[in-house]
Length: 485
RNA sequence: GGUGGGUUGGCGGAGAGGUUACGCACCGGAUUGCAAAUCCGUGAAGACCGGUUCGAUUCCGGUACCCACCUCCA
Image 1 (tube, chains in turn brown, blue):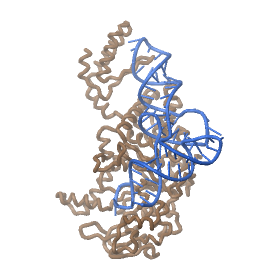
Image 2: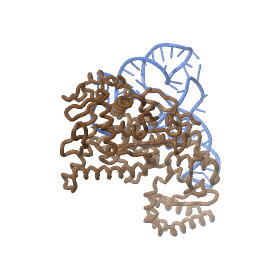
Image 3: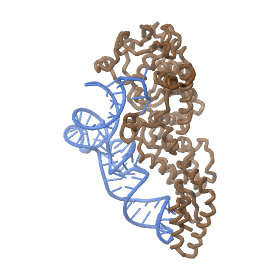
């Protein structure tokens, strides 16, 4: 069996991955707060850890991995969005508008992540469905002395957990010295964080031993992970920005509430995404969503390819240049698929995934190394020069395994071009026949003139020993064909 | 102020204490009537300053610059 190695944030080392139970490898990924469209940065962990899940399923078996990714559907930003809608005249109670908003956002999220080729998790728990578990957990923490209730709040007592700060390499004292912590009158210690907070009449709330209120951030992940994966599970992942405070607080809560469990054995964090060398932010005007890109005709596979070019533990820069290069590469593979498979629509089952690709992934998800292997395979497929060669089958099986099933990066544009040009097919073929005739007659100047004009009009021509083939390019412009006639 | 990450050839981007990463671009060659596509090949690097070592881009220390987190942004 392939030995997977992963860089564990908890130990700051690359270590052999040994599942607690190989029959059920358990993985938790922090999901989105569903108040708006996912921006491009939100997509990075989804794609990166989708690859991890694919690897785990490949190694341990498709039915031996449990993948959980939550939806945080209780949050002040959601409340604000719902309130804005109500003030804009939307009908319904605030609770209804909140539900509407989160439901709609989850639908968007699914559509966008599907487009990126990211498989759906086995469980997608919503925080509001686990309020009871959160309350039970908070009660236990209070009973054990790890938390306290004050003024309608429940707060975690950071000093009661000796290892607080271990994951992120911080000490409580240093952080307080940094003087950037919120000091609230009801806190025993400035670092204590909120488990439960009161809701007034204008906010969603649930009855609790501390009054009507809503959960703080952090507790939902602890409660849902415990409910669905148990006291101890294998891997917990998310963006590096969650390392502190979110994951640190999750650990503290879970370790204190379930002292016999280990919570997550391995912690994985992806580095952040930048855009053209800068942080993506609304103020810089370089903020955009996954949907924005998809709507521009950039398929999810292109986004996925660009993501996999950079190792997940390094900052990744989204650039126009990379986008264009990815389109070129995938288009080339699409062309190769048409040429090297007797049935380009053939479905693959993952039985011929390349071993070197698996080895590269097993080495801490080294996706750039995977691409290097794919380039080598590409050349081998070219050299095989016959349809359905073993290397071709393996190559496209591997691509599908990696989440690249549709390689036609220009399908939207091409589809439009073909539709627009449907009545020009005969004309193009007539012209190509004329070129062929001219070549036969060795009238090369006429043949080349026809070819150049067709190319200029957006017809791709490929001459091989077996003959010529052609296709409409996405930029096909029928009007230009008039120049040929 | 504290913490973490980064700095590799024109661009993107890895591994390894000593032997070609790889891709794109460029250049040369093969193929082609000429192109395109494809194949083969050359050149080009390791922010800066020290240290360890027979030998460092790879280990250690320092400096500079960039990014992020410490503010419910993945």
